[in-house]
Length: 262
Figure 1 (cartoon, rainbow, N blue to C red):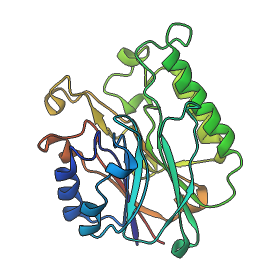
Figure 2 (cartoon, helix red, strand yellow):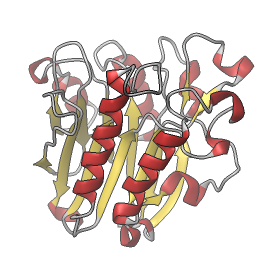
Figure 3 (cartoon, rainbow, N blue to C red):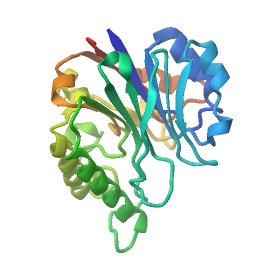
């Protein structure tokens, strides 16, 4: 079995204590991080190596965004795409030679600002264009691939705490849901979160810092793990470490982990 975790950590250096706690308690084989907020030379390689994660592929930038994949299993960098088309560090792909060449794509899709109108809000247009470029890329995938990360879209009605209230809120608008659906259809991606936790079961991965997360439970499912159909057939379980949202100095996102029979 191989276990793979994805987590928007919201600053890896600031939250290294809870990363260490999670890794000691759960020991996934691979950890994909988004929003690491550091340059590649600032990444805590030594801390991860001491925890058994000697392999690391990092795409970082100063103070913002950034993605990293760390692993116990040997891997090599496979791809870096600039789907934002502005040089931001939002993607890195790795390949695992010992796992029949499995490709793992780690992505941080833009949040899209506050106004769901590309004419009034350039960030919203950039998010839609980012997804469009990803869709074009996905059409050409020809090998087993796992796509994980912070997608910043909660696609299903049951993926948010109040569907009607959030229809005009960025992350759950019909246009974003439709655009994400085109990406999913481009490779017939299987949504592992909903394969193992079928709708309408509760399945959130993000709670705002602005509200008491557990009391009001205003969650959204913004983080996802999607697999090529053949790879999805090998998934055996999917868990959400919701309790980490209550740890000291937590991220506003929680880790998702999928277990594969590889």
